[in-house]
Length: 308
Image (cartoon, rainbow, N blue to C red; front, side):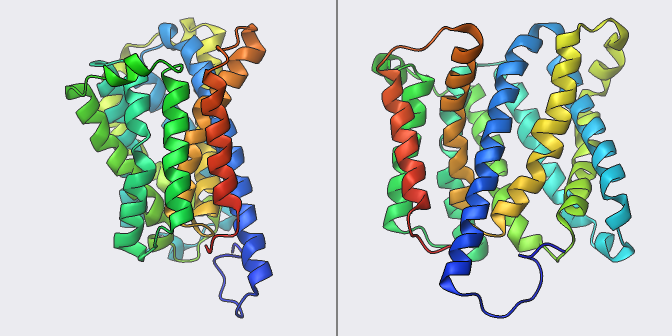
């Protein structure tokens, strides 16, 4: 059982802050893992259908996580399997709607829509857990969102103003709302099961809708003929960006308000800029780094002395 799951004596303020810092650390790792998936996915995208990639990602991640968590599993952990079906269904629906939206719009527009997710998460956090958003957190969310948009649009104000909120963007907004609901539900539905067991159950719950959506593309894919970059994407997305990130998010959600957890999504565009620069030597223009600085400032505000 995780330390945050077990009944315990009242914690001191210092212990509370230590637990919160561990949650923040988990989300920094989360953001790093997710950012690498964008860099790798960009290179693999022309070689494999997105539906087949997503289905393979969930199938492999669920299988590996179930094998790892098997020694910890008890019958009581699955007495209310609907929790895993709900959590996995929300996660799978987010990915499905993201890929469907990308058929209708571009990645820059979807990334811009994603900046609304922490705000929606704060709303769901209040509805489900009565988590309040203080002035410092609200300022951090606003600063992080603006910084992320500045990086996404490469400091081009005209491009941001010209953003067309069409059907693809509306579709992805629904997906982002489901993702925003997913985070506070971690704490709401937690019943003390080990993190690995909860992750395995969530992946199993998301496997059914994912395969139902992508089975035709899975069957039509010539898996033996896929190039190495496609297999690298499948393995990394399954193990690094799915199986590893679910326990990290659960760990953080038990220690931090939901809006703080989701705010780390703002860090991803800046990390993508960093990885691309390191890999290709093609660094972005100087004004874009203002957005990176704004994101760093937002994270500093989240770390500074707010009650969790």
